Image 1 (cartoon, rainbow, N blue to C red):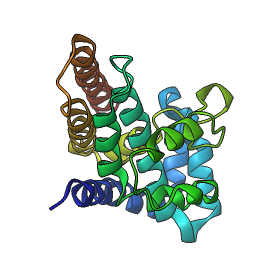
Image 2: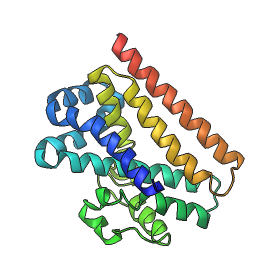
Image 3: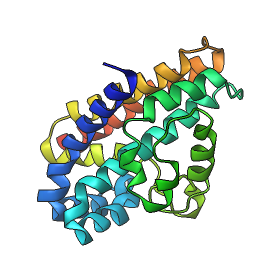
Image 4: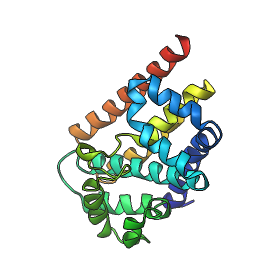
Length: 211
């Protein structure tokens, strides 16, 4: 299986973890965003799903790819050196799943993602995008949209392995980008910080479930 096909498969796993919860238990999702301050920023995205019940899977798929855009950009810039090999790796990762993000009309201009030279253009466009699933976090874009959806699923299903699976997939994606041209100290620190974020989110879910 190619890297792009495997990424699409893994994105499908994430979507399948979240879709039934958002589709079938929207009121519980809203309740959690109101009860937990750490998830309150997600409420507009949940509201969007409720307002568009026939497009819930597409919205969640776009959230998953938005999350990948954040992490591949973070990985590429970890050592402040944009490597052509990392751009090629990113293109290989995203080319087959990018249709999920191109569902957002303004990104259709980048689909299909067939050239590594398109990657900086996509990432720059995303970084300036003020939409809910864009990357301009100072202007209303949601930080960690898919990760927060995965947390909601973990909480409502009382299953911490859901958030574990999410972080395992994110780690695989980041490792692939970082691994194409060796590893620097700053890139090593990024891996450690992701592991710490996983531990923190896992603990917060367990604390809520045990409260």
